[in-house]
Length: 506
Image 1 (tube, rainbow, N blue to C red):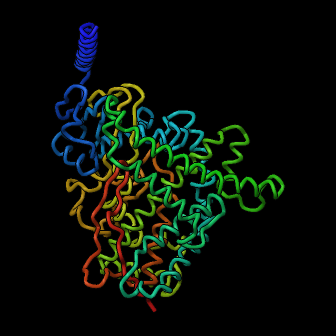
Image 2: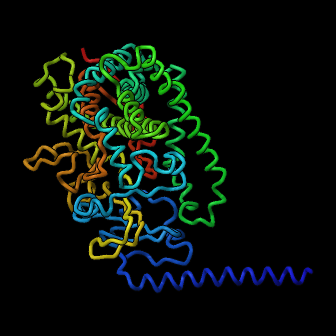
Image 3: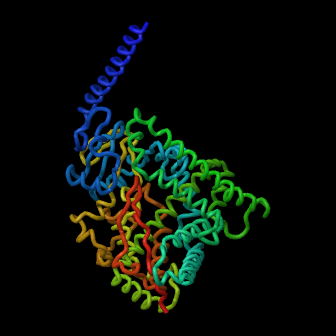
């Protein structure tokens, strides 16, 4: 019996080996018919994973671009990863062939957090995406929305300035201003979404929400789970990680539902089926749900997208901008001088004023160039085999546009490693909206980030109000604040939150 068992095991192992060898052989035969982009030599099963590892951040991919060229291919286990690192090819992916490359890849973790693409950001290009984009545009991403809510933005920033002035340590040893700006961003977006705000940084509901969103971000942005995503045979080792992801996902969605979505629905029912006065964003989403255009899960995932894509990314950029202003007192002085000359000393900056301040706008753009919040943009995918840069791109390849590399390559930018807002003040008007494919902080084309219409004025307002009201300095004994970066799957944020001295200006 034992001999038969051993023999059966040997036969089984030989069969598995034969299947693997056969699959590799068939794959090689197929790949010979394709002209694939260059890249490092891949090994069976693991591809290039053993060579490049899990940490596919913007800098590492930029180094590989210097070696393999403006388009290269990494075989990451079962996944084809195509990296684009030139303005011309970025234009092909995002604009010229925007339909062909308009889908999204997902991974094992984002499948959990987005309900396998029931949201807008990570769903494939098609009817569901078009419907979700249309439903989200009216309540969130129009000039009318900006004008409706700009007073709320200005109010929140005014409250933050007052709070900082009341803290004596702010003007002596310094405080982490980012924490107060985080409350600003939550209140801005929750006033827009639910007509709700949190009274302070100690609000219990705010603390719960912030903690769950932070944990979601940490789990999703980590490179730690790539091995199991790339190589299915290793996926069992991710069970514990994925279990935590599911628990965080369920807790977040339940919090959104119980404390915000259901509360707003109750308010509508007590005011006679419809909310009177100005509708907030979720009221428009409810109308789409009532018409049968989307379901209750879609509503939840819209709220999930806004919590991450709108709040966190804008907050990261605020923190980067503040750090650079502290580290460059001459730039801070230029912003203040422009504000005094155009708006008037002591006159609070408003949203319409931001368009009259070219130097402040240049500081915002330079922040987005040097410290791009989403340095690889959100990955694209071609549902069918396609052509790009003269190469064949296999169907369902993950396409990364290294937008950070485009914006920080000395081939296209003078002294790209330095923070120089003046580069955006020349005759050549480079805008964040993507009129120049060297500078794509929000992407461009069909899958560009619609939040640009909110992010740019909010960033200018926040940085402008801080400079108007405070002399911003590094802590005593330090010449600069630390701007060491930490990259993630999609994100680029500051590693250590900056302690900043904020001395009120009389």
